[in-house]
Image 1 (cartoon, rainbow, N blue to C red):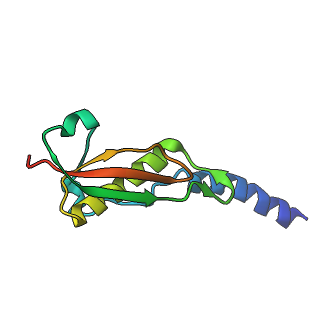
Image 2 (spheres, rainbow, N blue to C red; image 1 turned 180 degrees about the horizontal axis):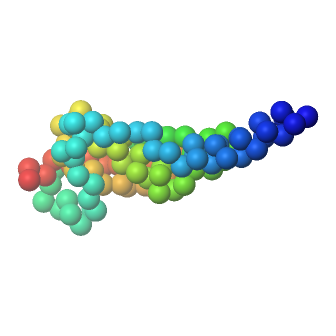
Image 3 (cartoon, rainbow, N blue to C red; image 1 turned 180 degrees about the vertical axis):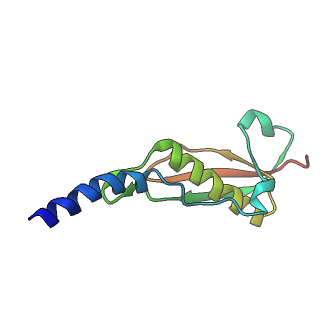
Amino acid sequence: MLERLLRIFLMCLFVPALASCTWVKVTEQGENVRVATAADVTACSEAGSTQVSVLDRVAGIGRSQSKMSEELAALARNSAAQLGGDTIVPVTDIVDGAQTFAIYKCQR
């Protein structure tokens, strides 16, 4: 009984910590891609789009919008670099851990 209570207690401590962790890293190529607004890319050419997703819940606990946003932008930057873009603009809100970004070539 005591062992079970200890396990539950430890889960209560560690699961929220895991839910707030950032697990996605920007690649070396992705470092060269910036996140911008639609107003920033008026002189740029559109190079495509990417839809990226992350887990929105860990062990049944919802993740922070800011952490998901950070990870989604990192994934989109990595994707844009692979597609030859240098700028991304979010075009949708985060829904169930997924978001769409437009990719631009801005020739900075």
